[in-house]
Each structure stands twice: as C-alpha cells, then as structure tokens.
Length: 338
Image (cartoon, rainbow, N blue to C red; front, side, top):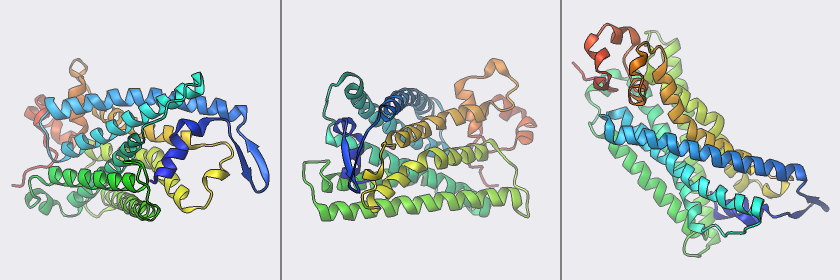
C-alpha cells in the first residue's frame, strides 16, 4: 500500500471540491457524491466506535479473564489487529469529517498512515494462519494433536506481527510516510513486496478454507461440525465479503495507470466502510455462534458465549459430559492425545 495511495484517498485535501481533466473533458464532484461521502464518513466513524468496543471486550476476556489455548491465542491477536485498524481509521475519518462538515482543515500526521497498513497485513496473515491450522488438524489429526509444538500459536503470531510491522515501516519510510524521505525506487519495490505478501495470503486463505470445507462435508470420513468450525467459516466468509475489497482496491490502484483519476465520484470511502465492517463483525460472530442452542439463559454471559464459540467438541459429546457442560472454560481447542 503506497504512501501515494493513502495520501490521495485519505488526506483532507482529497475531499476538497476538485476538477479533474480526463480525456480532454472536465469532471467535478456532484452534490450526490458529496452527500454520499458524508454518509460514508459518518457510518465509518460509527462502525469504528462500535468495533473498537466489541474488540476491546474480546481482548479483555481472552487476555485476562479466560484460559487461552492454541486457537484463542490467534483470536486474541486477530482482535488486537482489528482494534488497531479501527482506531487508526476512526482518527483518520474523524479528521476528514471535520473538513467535510465544518471546513476545518487538519493535516493528518503521515505516520498515522502506517498503522492501517500494519494492522491490515497482520489481520490477514493471522486469519490465514488460523485457516491453515484448522486445515492441518483435519488432514493430519494425530500429528496435529500429538506432535504440534506447544507454543506454535504464540511464536507464529509474534513472527507475523514483526514481519507486518517491518514491512509497514520500510514501506512507510520509502514512500515518504516516515521521516519525509521519499524514494521512488524503494517505494515501488516495497509496494511489490506488499502486494505479493497480500496475494499469497489471500490465496492461502481461500485454498485452506476450501480444503477444510471439502473435507468436512465431502470427505470419506464424516468430521463432526463444531462451533469452532462455524466460527472460522463465518470469519473467513466475512473477510472475503467485507475485507478483501480493500486489498483488491489498493492492488488495482498501484498497478492500473491512472486508476485514481477514473473514479469520477470517488468510491474509496465505501471500501473503507466495508473494511471497518469486517473488523467490527468478528466479535459479533463469536457471540452469535456462542449463543446457538444455548438453553441455560440465566448463565448467558459474554464470557460464556465467547468460550462456547471456541468449543472444538461436538454438541452431543458435550451434552453427554456433565462435567464439561458445567465448566465450559475447561474445554480445549486442541484435544490432548491419548
């Protein structure tokens, strides 16, 4: 994601009334475009606020109040990436809103543009890793349960965070977002690396998710559907619908000449809104999946719903086990090998 891409789309100057020459003709933002931009900015601010609150709840429970396991470590880190992304977009949208509604032109600090790059890449990488792990647990269940290194989740998340941060910082420095040092060659180079990183993880996410679904529904041996599989499937589906357009837009922007200028009525804010919805939806998915077939209404707390969403045991097996039913926090995502 280049600095030019972010500055053109997110700086307050980009939303001033502008006239663009395209193929010898002049185009100007219409009142419809202005109204639409205002609506998208307001919706993005609202969704970002809601999403920050929901992800903060997930971070609170998984980070402090609940026992973590192999899968919840990934969910914790995914919630952190979503929280950072929503925080950065909230601040940026708020500054744009000041200009659109009150004509207060506040220059957005360039360093703030690095955070969405870093958070988006981290979230994509972690979600892809979640899908890969569950795919491996289905294809090689014995190896996964008995031979998988104990701290794989934590180490993997740490590496992904470091790689995403390093890539974001290097691209930000080369593209002029940090230290005001723009280098065209290195900016384009890191744009290519970022695009390759994104495309690879997009492909891995789609491939592993498809493999997982095929093995569950079409495999020779029936694999019982658990809440964990439902949670992963819905999370991936939501990303493909709401989060993927953001990545596609930035790739098109960088590789199609004059892509920005063919947008007569700039639709970037719609893409931004969808990406905010994606980061907001994950906690909602957890709580909805946790509430499915929940019969004991007086104990339906957010903590319990979150625990049930991470449950990797079939419903009938859990209902037959009184001890597990009474203490759902003891259910582990990765079952121990016998």
